[in-house]
Length: 463
Image 1 (spheres, one colour):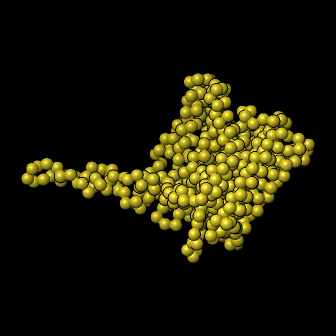
Image 2: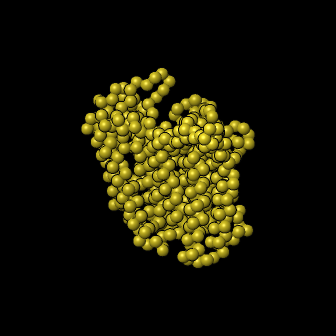
């Protein structure tokens, strides 16, 4: 059907427009000062279009019917959540609750939608992996251009209000754009690996380098860690392929280029914003690191060294300080939510406490806030029943993929599976620690596309 093909092609091309939508969202918030942004409108319409297509496909596809049932089950537990918490929570901010649940359902809908999209392309023998890689690359080039132009022109938004250094280009949400860049980065590395036949063709790594430089501008641990993880993954993938498969010039060239980039990252680390920010964070926690040996004091009577007990105590990093360094105060909100959940009635334990838990009337100018650790936020918001309803389908496919990957390791260990796998793992890792992935539509669409592609390509999802 011609119309169906056009729909799926436009749906896949929607990936390219994500950075543009995010810049327009920033303009809506900062220049027009309106909360109903371009991003909200366009993404809700796209989600609705996918749901309508899924319902249309359900007439002839048993898989589509199963997906519809899954979404109905998810909608049911959310409706129970709203009905329960409307009577339990006081105050109850219905607008904030509905806005949050709109974000919650975005990832599941995107996942089932992209699964049907890739199944259609696979059935029609269309190169969906190449198209997806190209569209991710185009998105990365737009993001890099925005960062570089905004930085050069001095119009970049700041990622931090004080003490720390960081820039977000023309993107409003620093955490979200950081997660997006980390998820896209492995795909730009895959693009380079697939096209680089010899070292002289290093130009294919330019999009990767541009995005990596932009990630350094952020000044976040997520940005720096994402670059390091991707480069190490690329290097070790090439190294393993070199010793287990063909020792081609292509593999040697990519291995050498990735190794050189690792060295460049190591050498330039001391001048990066994240390096400065780590010390700024340590200073806020009253932690002082000494890199040189302090001159020892000698007792004039005994001739022995005098131990500086005060210094030893200062240099001991407590568990609380370490958690704060890693989670940036999220651990405090996590503990608060755990306490609320423990005291909540059984109905809330089963179906969730909704947006931001059992919040109280906030101070003027403040609003209830989430933990910003997605899995924890989803668990406490949806409850035991709601949480496992939501993750049941993605978890089922992930487990099946892992079993398939390990059982057929010789065939499945390819740059495509590794790099797309790294993108997915980075998405989950950031989701668990820094949040703004599974509960952020601007980010979750990338994770959904990556996951769906892996599952369909390896035959885990099939009609």
